[in-house]
Length: 53
Image (cartoon, rainbow, N blue to C red; front, side, top):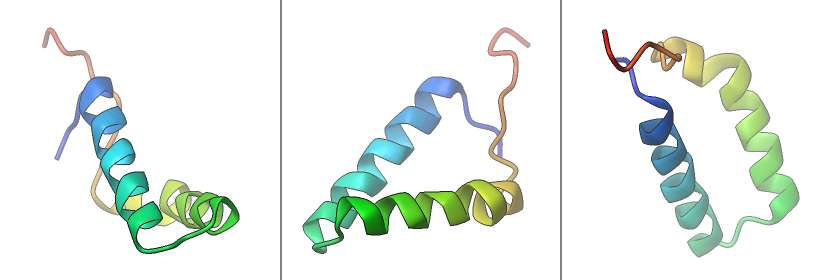
């Protein structure tokens, strides 16, 4: 799945909102996003691409 930069920003924003709703602290969210940056995002191949092509 390829997402545009705007799509990724929207996804991260929505996930952050859910984490806050579930009571995660800023530190816990930062740790989780660090894991995502190393593992989960690679798994789903969420990467930059040229929106015109």
